Structure formats: C-alpha cells, structure tokens
Amino acid sequence: MNTQASPLNIVALGWGLSAALVVLFVICLAVALVFPDWRASHGWIGLFSVAPTTSVRVWIDGIVFSIGWVSGLVLGLVYNRLIRR
Image (cartoon, rainbow, N blue to C red; front, side):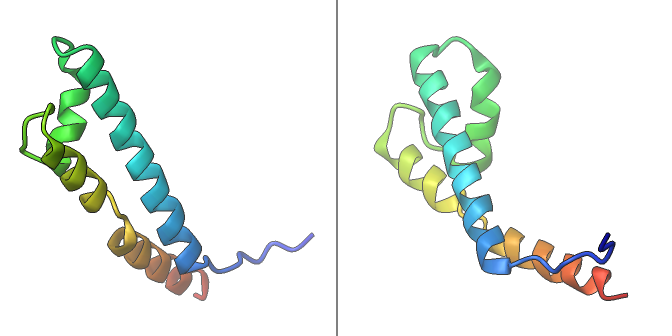
C-alpha cells in the first residue's frame, strides 16, 4: 500500500472551491428570498455583499466574491509544501 500523499492540483482545487462557494451562496440567497423573515441565511450573504437581498447587486457581489481562487492557491501551496517534508 502506498502511504505517500500526493500533491493537490491547485487549478482543480480552485475550481472546486469556487463552485462550492457559488452554489452555497445561491442556495442561501434563494432561502433568504423565499423566507425573508428567517435570518439564518442572511449571515452567509452578508459575508459577500452588503446590498439588499432583493437587489441585482447582491447576486453580482456574491458570485464574484465567492470565487475561491486565492483560498485555493494558498491552501494548495501550503499543503503541497507540507507533504514534501
């Protein structure tokens, strides 16, 4: 059995993290639009935009700022560096 860890593909990690964050944002925004009095999803939306949940700007801000390339790059580089030790 091979116990050596393989390095992360940073491009795949960036795409995967970006897709996951965009999907989570859209789900939370949909819940906030359907149940406006339920404040649970508004916290996640507030991380990415200060615009009102009924505006078009909240969609643009949320999707653009959900792109996780910086996080994917940092996580991938740190992980790949640590497994080489």
